[in-house]
Every structure is written in C-alpha cells, then in structure tokens.
Length: 325
Ligand SMILES: Cc1cc2nc3c(=O)[nH]c(=O)nc-3n(C[C@H](O)[C@H](O)[C@H](O)COP(=O)(O)OP(=O)(O)OC[C@H]3O[C@@H](n4cnc5c(N)ncnc54)[C@H](O)[C@@H]3O)c2cc1C
Image (cartoon, rainbow, N blue to C red; front, side, top):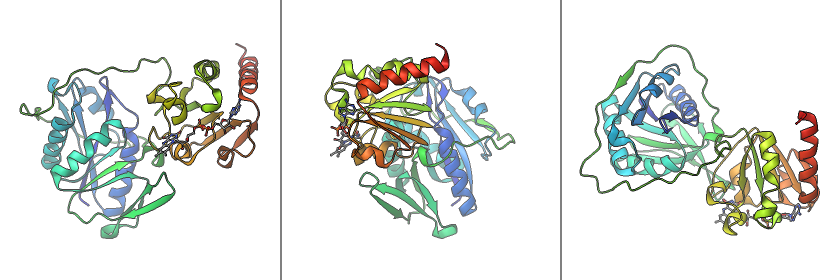
C-alpha cells in the first residue's frame, strides 16, 4: 500500500490525542501491507507538535506551519494535504474521524481521485487482499469494504484503535513550504468555541450522560456534582438535545459523538440503538434507570434500577465520603 500519510489534528496549537488512534491504524495497515507511514501536521504556530510526534515510528513528520492556516477551512486545507501527499509519495491518507476530518477527508479523496472508507473499525486480511470493516445503520450491520482505486483515504473510528504508544526512535521532522491557496472560494468568519472547565467529551476518560428521564435543565443539573467529583465530561442523548435541555455538542450517538471512555455512566436514558452506537465501546458501562427493561441494561456492566433523582444524590454523597471531600 506504499506510504500512508496520517493527518494529525491540532486545536489551539496543541496536538489532539485522537491523532494517536490514527497512528495505530496506520501501523496496523502498514504492517499488513508491507508499507510505511508518515505524519502530516497543518496549522499555524504548530511547529512544536512535529517534535511531539517524532517518536512514533513514522518515516517522516511533515509540518506545514503557515499563518494562513490559523483557522480551518476545508478547501485550502484539502488542497494543502493533497500537495503534501504528492510530495511524500503517499498512496493513502488517514485521520481519526472527527468533526474536522469528516469535513476534510472527502475533499481530499475527491482531489486525489481516491476511494474512501469512513469510520473504519478494523483492518482484515493482508497484502493486496486487505479489506476494511465499517459500521452501517447505527452499527447494526458491519460492512466489509475493499478499495479498488490506486489511492485511498481512510476516516478511522478512534474508539476502535488504541492510542499509539511511542515506539522509540526519532523520525525526521521537516517543515514543508505549502501556502494556502489565495484563490479559495471560502472565507473564515469566526469560530465560537464552547468554553467549559470540564474535559472534552471526545477525550474524557469518564463520561456522565443524561437522558429524557431527567425532565428539564434543573433535572439535568443533578449530573453536575457527580461529574465534578469524577472529573468527568457530561454528555446526553438526542432527546435532551432536541428538547433544549443540553447543548448540541453534548450529544452522544449515531448523529452525535462516538466515545469510548474508561467509565460511562448513563442516567435516565433508555439506550436506544442510535445512542448505543456512540458509547457501546466504553470500557465500563454503568446504567441508572427506573425501568428494569430499559435496553441500556443489556450493554451495562453495572445496572441500578432506581429513580435517578434519588440515586444520583446518594451516589454523590457516597463518593464524597470515600474521597473525604
Ligand atoms: C436517525 C436517527 C438518529 C438518531 N441519533 C441519535 C443520537 O445520535 N443519539 C441519541 O441519543 N439518540 C439518537 N436518536 C434518538 C433515539 O432513537 C432515541 O429517541 C433517544 O436516544 C432517546 O433518548 P433518551 O434515552 O434520553 O429518552 P427515552 O428513550 O425517552 O428514555 C428515557 C429513559 O429514562 C428513564 N427514566 C425516566 N424517568 C426516570 C427517573 N426518574 N429515574 C431513572 N430513569 C428514568 C425511562 O425509564 C427511560 O428508559 C436518533 C434517532 C434517529 C431516528
């Protein structure tokens, strides 16, 4: 398969940990096809990130650091990545699926004339017969996909590939002079980040998620002290997002974020398949629901049949006692 170019994701000049999952995918694919991989970083003021990624076994780390790439725009970023792929002789491009890469990778694929597999969860077979598994219909069907084009682009589901550990060695880090395309037909206007003191939902090791059973904003707020004590991110179902109880960026599921924390606590949510599609890879799943028949219990490691308005404050009290706070 030649060289796989892994696109690193950064935010505010810092590396997003999710990049490490795409590196594991690239190592896996390179191992199965006898190829190698390189890492590309694009942004402004991100030179230090190149050094951070030098110990993962890439044949090279390529940094495009230009003030013109300070703010993400799909068209110029896609053009730059295609130019980089050509420079390093990459036959494929891979990145961990995220809001950013879901926007970017299809454009890269179109420009490369490459077949694309999104949400890759496994690599099967090897050599020329290598194939990829991806979920369809909220994970109810797993498709096996073969790429027949000479080039390929992969969106990798980060929850299915462990974060890569450094492998030692030092890949050469090289600055590449690729400038944004001045003729691009997109203009950056503004970015309104959600400011939160909590960990990022996509990267948190503990997530407390609430559902419609919490009724309203005041009910949803019973999750706050629990999340504070566990240093957890808060998430929710589409039902609470649609009802305006929780903001859009907290949605977990098929049409929300796909997460795999070490600990997921689902409170007063039923566990609809579209929600499970976003959290069932969590390492330990705890469910609190007053209905013993709720589907969430079928995936839970620990289940508590109880009224959340009673159980959550009790849980908070017990954790406080244990932590002595
Ligand atoms: C195309 C499509 C995409 C979708 N994408 C998503 C998605 O990305 N994410 C997502 O979450 N959903 C998604 N949905 C919606 C999904 O089908 C469900 O409707 C939604 O997940 C239900 O949310 P819920 O569990 O909060 O609510 P409900 O299903 O209404 O469940 C509420 C639960 O709370 C329990 N409960 C009530 N009161 C209490 C209490 N006091 N104490 C304890 N338990 C209590 C009830 O027993 C019940 O099990 C999608 C649907 C479609 C059609």
